[in-house]
Image (cartoon, rainbow over all chains, first blue to last red; front, side, top):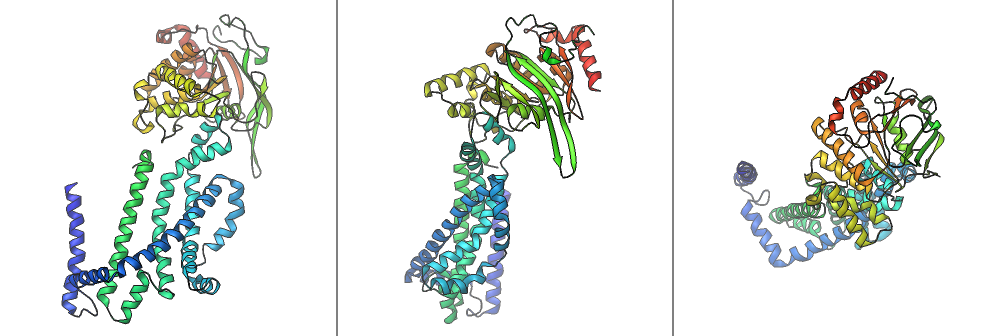
Length: 248
Length: 273
């Protein structure tokens, strides 16, 4: 275990060191700031209160939009994975819709929904829901046949098999799906905030660009990275706690 | 042919040595079951005109080489697949789909990995009309019979393959099915565990008086365990012969050295080819 931690630390040091050396070589903070410059900018964001209000604005959009997307993904995905009839009926439309780049829908959504919160939330939903549906359907399909047959021969009906076997077996897989597609949700959020927003992390990046404050932009990028790592660890923890039987 | 009892039509019933059954009653009857798979223009006859029966409290084996349709037949009896022709009766009632009257044990990987041993056994009891107190009692009884009491709280992944199959048998027996159907239950186990579980199954059978139909491709296993054997031939799958095993219910492993055991084993092995 020791050598893994050492190598991990070495990786971080190499990335940071390269950045720092590069910044010193260029010696122009309005092109590439050094790590200390960036930290200072991060501190300013925090004391200005920008970090709390804008971070929360972005996280709230993700929570609502991605929450709706996962809910739809679970209901529709489990149905597709469990019933051949539903699979047959939905295959063609979903197959078509999922190839439309959701970011291309931004102007349409702005036109339909105005510039408030709803176009941003719905962009996140549309940008992730088809991935969620298809991947949850795969998770539901991967329940071993014998687990289903065993339930039927123990007197279970279709409803019981769905709730006690398919749903239960799919819990760790569905959390994995949520974890993987969360990155796409942040992508859609940034697209939405870059185009039209009064607050949010990506909106702050646009603002920083106007003042050529590259250090602030870097600080915001680091915030994105930290959110990603924290949510990833959180979902891994949830998976292990909810389904210790599926731990690798 | 002393040990082989050939009956032209199985439905002729009590021929041969079934003296230890006083009042026979047929728990399970399979009548003229055929199964045809059609894939595009290919038509494969998996089973053709299968007749068989299992008496109350009997342990019968369905013996055949792989691909002879024996597992398909068991699935039809279990209600998991539909027969193209013919019907299955349990206690005189025609089978429509799967149900708790026919417990089933599969080759492996059929325990619920998120449920511990006791809760796996409880799965069928929760679905039936069992009171909480009776469920608890029944689970403890089965844990005792299966020598699993100290593993009640263990998850399946913490158990050996042999122990998992013991749990699977306990789970199938829990709701007191009319017939227990075993689909090559020891097929995925190593030879030693397999022999151990065969003795174990005989013990369980004696203690519970269960009616058991077991599918196997292992000739020795079939002769050692069963009172009667249906030998199946392949393509199309049909019952080639019905054999009465000339040993009583209580047989120790020394029966495996009995010349009649060896003769019967060799004869059946020849039949299977």
